[in-house]
Image 1: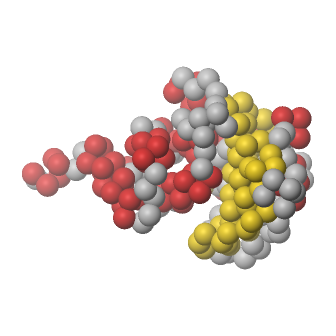
Image 2: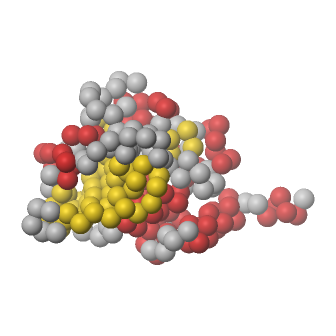
Length: 219
């Protein structure tokens, strides 16, 4: 019984942060953003008890809320600065968006499912976020009217190099995205060289839902 009493949300969160540290998420700002973002607020009721697990969980429209380790790894790889304008492709539950909002000046986030967009917007409002700007549309097209961006994060797997998104990045900006057509993709970081080219780094293998082309869904 004593063991169960000790298994509180605080202790589960502490275990999660330790797990992220042990896997290489070491940036103090990123860890603090994760620690202060209530993942349970982004998790469907059926899975709230699992909110502190280091695993992906299902959400509406056949999408997922990403594994905290992957969220931490991608956020760390993006090297976000407090002055940065960040474009996020795939709002989903809004969990990753919220973490980015704590590290940057502005987050522009695009979601192709109306249901997910509305739910995420309600969460942003409840959390009092004032630096997140949402858009319902095709994420593959980015947000040309607001480009260029300092940082771009793609939270769905692009089948090939995301040229349209790379064209919306500042000359020395950074884009992080899973690339690949199969069930396992390569998480890649593109770092602008200031001359129109990119240094490309393969970070790790990941599993993401595909970045779909075409019109947004009213679901």
